[in-house]
Image (cartoon, rainbow, N blue to C red; front, side, top):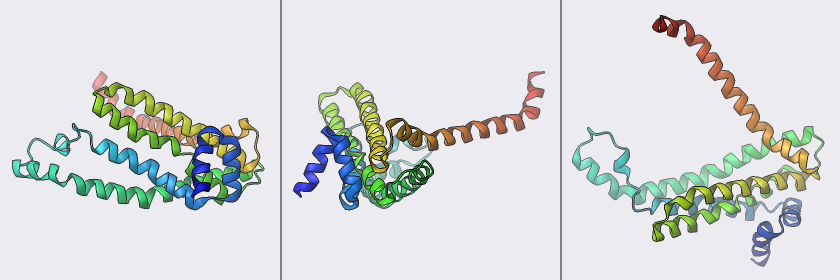
Length: 211
């Protein structure tokens, strides 16, 4: 327990040394706890907002008795969301780790996939603070602070993930940054290509409307 608390403190205040230790010792169990908590806590906090109502998303034609029942099902939807997070978030992180580990190996990295997985899981720790931020904003009525603070936590998480890549593979910072952003640049490139392809295919059908 003391080791886990020390790792939590270290990730927040001594990220370089602590993430090197975590990736080296492959603290997967502790990392999974952090990953799940960083996903579940903000979900629960957002769910408890007073203006969170499923009825807002329903079409106008839904009968009244259905609209009356759905808000009462809120706890069941929350339970389903928590179960989904517990089942799929670690799996998604596993795939993400596999991509980054493969790129790292091509760049000459010497780290392990298990170590990188543990480090990336611990790197989500800043998102845990989203829960108290949402709760405080709900109590105080100051909702405009949510977006900028969540953005800060998100950037903090990215910096920790880059640090995990760096420490796991003994990379220079610039190499870790390149490896982190390569998958996202690839996805953006694919999306742009698909948009261009779809637009080019739709041009013959659109042009007649402008004549």
